[in-house]
Length: 190
Image (tube, rainbow, N blue to C red; front, side, top):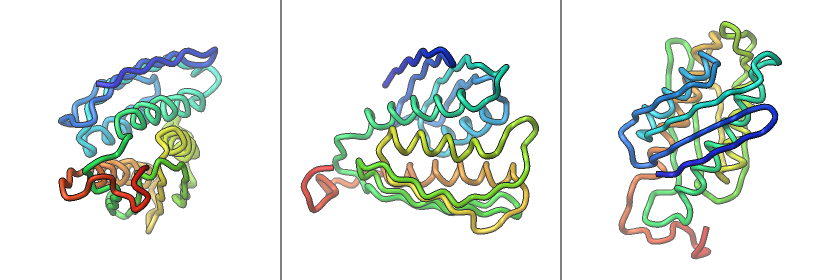
């Protein structure tokens, strides 16, 4: 179990992560839609995730969402590396009604994000541009190469949820054990 704490003037975050979990979670960020997305991520990645965040929501949700991405990314990095005897690459396409989002990722120990999931509306009080902020922080701090692409969709709730679930499934697939692979790199190290 990886445990992380982050305290700043903007947020106070406590996180516990079990990478080889059962998809169980206890999420409380003060941002309802974001809690829903993190719960979907935990469920479909089969990670156990406890995350509590107290943020400056009187300003907006930006700091809370970004800082949760930072802390989750740090925990993932600590849990994943050094990488050994797993697939390393993962991909998934997840549909939510009219929306379809594709995720491809590489547990490369190099941070890179391609995010092409345009959403034009808010979901309740949630600003959908924060989805990209979350994945930027997560990919940077987990040191993964992550591509999220909207294939189609109009409804912002569906697009965002498909993105979180596609990431979750791709991550689960990348972490699948493969005893025939020692270090999954021709370099011999990741």
